[in-house]
Length: 323
Image (cartoon, rainbow, N blue to C red; front, side, top):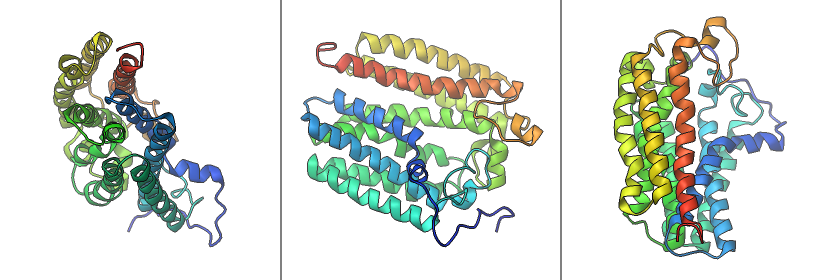
């Protein structure tokens, strides 16, 4: 039992539509939609625009369903962390059972609609993504291993493969290369955030890498994963999937990413409590101590770099641009 359980929720819900929208994790959903659209556009062949829109909506709903299930399961844990205590279930605005039902209905609806309008490989991959995130990551991995985000991060890497499969009905190695970019990007991205949020994770009993192995080990692992991620990010330009625009973006951004990871490795980020913990107040995501700024900078740049990579692929594969 924890000392700070989630707030008691009333028998009659007072949730507003905005609360259910927040259950979908709209920020995460926006990245899922963007990478799924990239997979759909990059894939050879085309869907008619109606089925393409339906496919993207289904993938968005599936991602939102996974988010709702995650919040339903993690309500008490979220209530212990500054970064997540305002979420609808943690704050008591939505009841756990309502969030669970909402997520289950969206899951079934999105998978069935995607399968019927495109193909069942795409539908099956969407179902796998939801189960992977809501069950394998949230229930099995998150509290059992500091490698939780390494294994569980695969859930966030499926969308471009689903988008590709929706168009072609198969998932060739090129689609899995897009998967691999997100998969290898996730650990340095997430651990950079965890370095200045370690107190939150420790309080919630989650063995994120800085909590389980310490800040120094985490900084080293961020660097090692970056050394794997950057070549993977450049690989599409060397395989024909990406063109000259992608080559420039991936190399320039990759060098910058590696430079930030090296600076983080040499820093003392995570050695001291973050700024919010030190002064005992709520903090913005980027409000950190001076020592933690290298972690914050890598976290922020990692988002920009991933968006730039997929934007370059999109531009090069738009009709009349990349051929």
